[in-house]
Image (cartoon, rainbow, N blue to C red):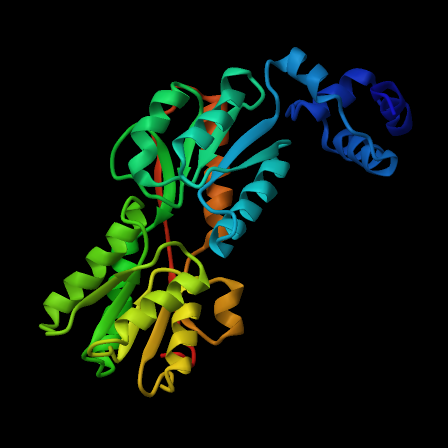
Length: 323
């Protein structure tokens, strides 16, 4: 199906169809609707290469995900894709694992003009290396909030969220509250641990225990919980992801202990998994984080000299049977 045929079906000029495909705001609403309907009915796919030659844009975004197996990351990507499509863009997904060599390979798409911009979810500690590779290309850091620097970002207040969790547990009578954390090269891990320790100190609790999971899987959470149970077991556990919390629940149950009677468990992210296992958790606005990242990136693409923006979204504490 050609652009000329679309114009014929819609009863408009070829120029009007071209303006619709390039998201021009000069098209009358009724003509835009007719063109979009004709495109839908004919299943028309525009020639992206031809469009790139005309506009010097590829209409593609590179999304570098730290761990696509993490349900939170998957939800953020859904939000990114939804908002990108609204803006006439498609995404290329790179599961970087915060590995700089894998990131380097993906970022070659920038220099080749295959993508117009990049959204990253890599570890905060990798940002200086990424910055050197990305240069002046439009870039947004997603879900790892940066207090300073030149990169725009969107996330939540991890310290406040963690403080709220630990305060809730302490105020409900829990005296031995443990933390299952992840890799401290991620800023969220450092901030959530900071929130945990600040409340332990504020409440003058004698017990403090932190176990570091090898990854964000349920099995890693189970292994971390088993270590916590070896000595003086906690009476509450706060895990920095729902998947880690799910593993902790399994370890507690296998040890013959009851949740929440013996040990309360709280997760983080607010994924579907948490709802399935009735897990108390901090719910992040994952899809909104993805959508906002695209908004910030579109602004950078359209206005390269636009100032850096840092957006902090709200979180919710969801109370369920595990605590």
